[in-house]
Length: 458
Image (cartoon, rainbow, N blue to C red; front, top):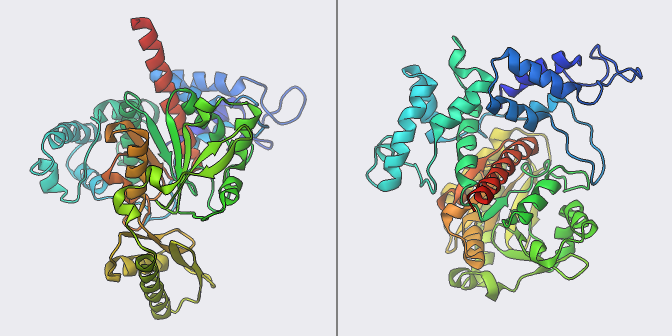
């Protein structure tokens, strides 16, 4: 969250560290290493909470932000400044008519008043989406598969970041997005059976992989142990080559083997590749990936796609991409795959140029089959099918309804390949892997409370 940077700086300074939380911040331990002694950050955080007029909720957030992960698969340096995870880079990446509508309301409303009205309008919209007040004010609004308590989420956020006490600075797009995320996490935790993640920019940095020290490994395993299915839904597609998918999640599979997870746990993990074209599962005692036969999970509609139809779509998409690149004077390299085609800039360019390419294909491609044309940030790709089709097929395969599913991704703008998932389940919009880590910790905290409450009732 934008405000987390300020909170982190306060916590770091109270702990005696600099903005980076490391050496050079003016503090040193008794050993002279420049690192605050164990527990100092948490003690400082509690002092900060007291100074801010803390409640149990804000202390809970401080714990989530500061508690280091136990050392299971290797160490990774952490500091209070890791709290600065909820910052958004770029402008076009943050496009959402609903959030923008809520932002515009701040010209005449306080944030609390905005959230109070949103709570009423969303409840009304859930009863009658076609004629609701929200539909009239935001015609592109989709469905809300679970009720959202935005006032409660705002109050929780406000305890930590003083939104209601600001006199001159209104909340920005990212802050409203995070309030919606908080409400979504708390609501989804009540029914969750399947959580899906985008890969690049969500679980790990663009172009990276899940390494052995990735903080999400522990969270994914905790979710699976909580009887929740976990799937990675990615544009990456490697037909006939499960080892290529294994390379992208090497650290996670190694953890499965190291912990000797039983089959009934690993059966809860899948990878959906090529947006919706390939499904893989974990198989055998060596915890390797294998393709699930199409007949076991693809919808009849998806199985009806013919190879000539797919190739015609990709041929036309490639032509439009190259024509657009020529018009924009952008040299590119073409990447052609079985169910996808894309262009990678061969010279430096800006995000807006790639946005233009993606929108060109979206508007001009006439195809017999559904497709996804998206701006990947460093390239533009067109895939046969989209994540919505893949997610719907996976939900059917696992027996999950929309209210029991949550998709986490970083590209929900008009040219993002996560946006299609809005049609079939609830979403969690993150900006980077650090945000994903934070909100999944919040979700796991809710799941733990749910188990404790269930045990108490029984």
